[in-house]
Length: 303
Image 1 (cartoon, rainbow, N blue to C red):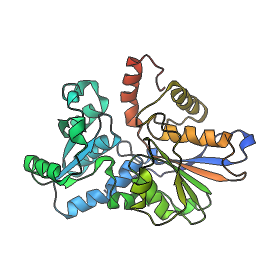
Image 2: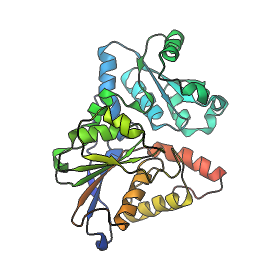
Image 3: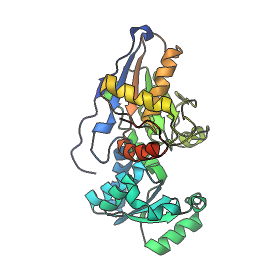
């Protein structure tokens, strides 16, 4: 993927002195306007591999407001690939015009196939993939969320030599690819903390497929009920954080992670004098869709 990226800078976050630590946010969300954060990192080497193998079509999976779907659609347009999105929820086929993510992906040229949630669970099966190959001919397969070995390789480039003096590296997680890359490129003296956006501890197994180091663990207490689930407390936190730091957080990943970090600070989790680096993995395109849902539920929106 060859285009100019903005530099990912570490911005200091305002903290009360009582915590006795320093917190910085790595602005991966700023590296590209449409393929931002971990989505660029995950796609970088996969796009190169697809070109090298002569594919002209990318196929992937995602939900209605998926950052991954939006990023793949734009990357396909940018680098000359047809793109196909297998979308979870067949009821959404008649509701594209209500969905900012799908409107964007379609404008980038992505073709959609909407399937039931039950069938979507079979997305990894050989039988299902064979059916897709018969329907769409040959394609380069990108898994849901984009995580595979090449994605992890790309995410290993998130940390740089300037990040060596941080004691803790914090990262939100969905499929485990981003934190796996960060673990692989971390120093043995650093502790990597993952904040899963989904319920359960299954990510431990998924991450272990890609890493050999033991300097990491998952903090399982800040998923707010599961993937894309939010409450008023989280929304108010995100809005307050933006007012105080002039940084927008997304409600699915980074917002939950930063909420968790602040709660751990309050509980004295981090030793005094620690330097903490949190990774902003992007995902801001999903806010428009989330706000539509919040309005329907008569809840506060993300400012």
